Length: 102
Image (cartoon, rainbow, N blue to C red; front, top):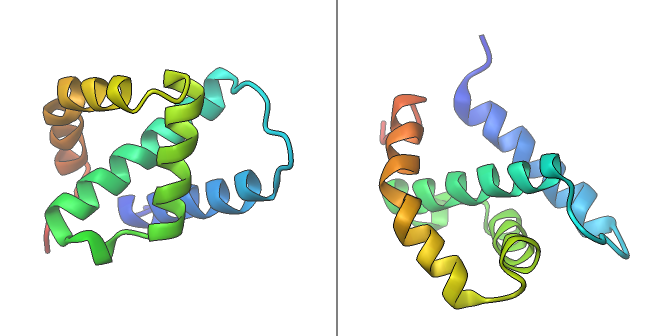
């Protein structure tokens, strides 16, 4: 069985190395956007429950900035509104997957 934190770490590493290497990422397809959202929520949950230093900072910064650009057209205000609306449900999902404090 693949542990949830190992799966998330692998996803973040893939995002960081493939996304950061791209010169022109262009518009995101549905899979790219879903991966960015998953990485964003993983980062948010880990930083909230384990502290900011427990989150992979470079990958989290990349996921957040790309999500803001691709899903919200660069609008920080729209990103924050979406985050506020979805945080409780997404953190509940992360907790159910076993990402809680050890």
